[in-house]
Length: 487
Image (cartoon, rainbow, N blue to C red):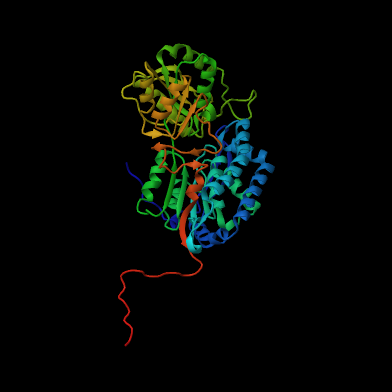
């Protein structure tokens, strides 16, 4: 596969215009020139130390003021997220409300995971563990959850004392710009936090720049691998990758088929399937399949797909753009032509706009089954005869972000937990369920063992161990020639 050579920061064309398009209407939401990346990197590089020199209490209070600024502009921000992503307003409001909790949890994680520790030793000596910021961090985020995911990265980075160059997705730049504006209004100096506007080339140039000390990335596996390649000759640079997943749900024996179907639909089709934790594959017990799949199809048929302003209120909106919608349609046709049996056909209800209705397809007969994340509302079904077979099928992926069990008993859940190759595991909960104090990350092609969430603090500062005495005190007790006194 050919990869274009990387563009240095000083060759990015700042005259190009970046536009944000409402996927539900096709209208332009926002536009601005591409950033002068060279100037932004230079600014943050020269000034981040002054932010690091502020007291931690000042940085914490600044982040809390940011949370209050978001609360005051909650409706404006939620409306902008809906306009840029096409998601229903009820859903984007939930995203914005979650920001308040995320800020406070980041403050808690900063104290718990990067706090100072000291212990006293003999003769007044002491040992200490402290943490230092890396310096200049690049934050690169996707179009899904374009407000919450950046906050999960930027707030811990700023709390630790880093300067931040934040590149939002070129699909949702207006949301990123508004978040940065709220942070500046809360007291974060402009020179310590810059919003980088640009496309993929800008992101690669930012990540690979020698003046950037670390990269905090959430997005597709393809982009994450490109970042890893771009930084391969910089072993001293921290690279934290939170990438996509071909996430499985196992559905096993359960007396409540309606609740099981509801959890599966929420996991697969919430946010139009455009969540990194969305379920992509359903592995179902063969004796349960007919009854459960019938319930899933009946409930899916009732889902309202439409623009955010539709009445009645939609369950899901469009996918992010026409390229994505066309790719999902082609992928469904590919599955059909290679042995997949449609349970519910994918449809394109509004011509010229990227609305895609949920598709469900039985791929049990496909051999081999493709291990590709389809980032949208397509659920692939595989029937299994035994629980061990179901676990093997769930693990038949190079990804390892999340895995979910619906039904089963405690002994089966323990086996599922012990044998699942995933960083997030849920039982009788939607696949995207996250505990407030939990790490977010996966294995294989889903991450490089630097999880985010509560553990993002670990990626934003490095530990420094020291042994200290207030005065020098030393003696050599062996291996010295004896002093002979003058006669």
